[in-house]
Length: 380
Image 1: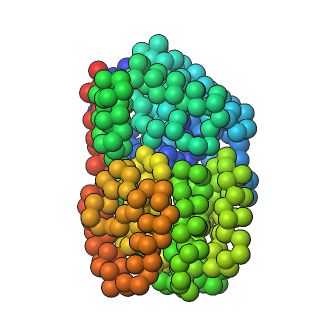
Image 2: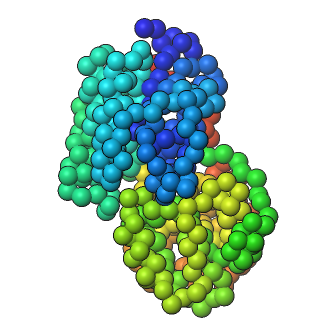
């Protein structure tokens, strides 16, 4: 099969499903696949079967094609710990026997199966979206499976894409394996007035602190709630997002927030509600212990937000000097930084004035697609 010009046949798997915003991986796969299809490439995405991770009420329409991308639903056992394994196995089998030039695996767990299409002489790309075996939500078996996926990527992938310099150094130090650094992109977003969020939750512009993302332990929402409860302010704290196989953690942080009526849980948000939440926040906070490359942070900055993040490399690499950082996991430092920003509205305005231009110039999806396609064509 020839991979010259736009005749390349590409398969992508490892995401839950597109179109979807169930997590950052789904955003990346959608941006890559639809843009490649627009350029004339033949792209197939293998979607999991089953319900949206935040509940079946968020299920989208079952599509066979989306913006020029072929969508195939594959066998999935829709249970925690099994959905990713079974869908990755199914997708790997389908891609191995399909007429593809490149099979692009997303995330370490799905990469467990990358050896299978490799046997059938496919070119294998693995994008490591983060060191997933370190995530708190996994049990012993799942952690082993993900770790083995990382090792299989090192052994069988023609190229490995990483999203941060820190992870790139990890693969160099741990395996002696060279990787390719291609960070994610972000799109320019229209600023929306606080119409629906005011009607639904009583939220007004600059009257709330925002956390928006998956509500999972490594994102650190528990640090933020503890810090916020010690702050004197009439602003609200909005925790926007659904769980991802982490209902127990959601229950824990809701219990932690009990007794403070300034704290609001919205559940999973998308569409206009999400745009309005980003557009009208006073400060956006991402207190993560672990990240790959946080798309929610890129998005928050693209709306012109003042951002406060933990000082892990994956966050500080994104924001540079255009945001505020606190020491990872230290509630007192988070509280102090947040209290300072609440007092210093002029400082917040200065960060807001530079955030969007900085992030949109630094991270561009067209550049990401161009570099990824070049890698498809030149990988050994």
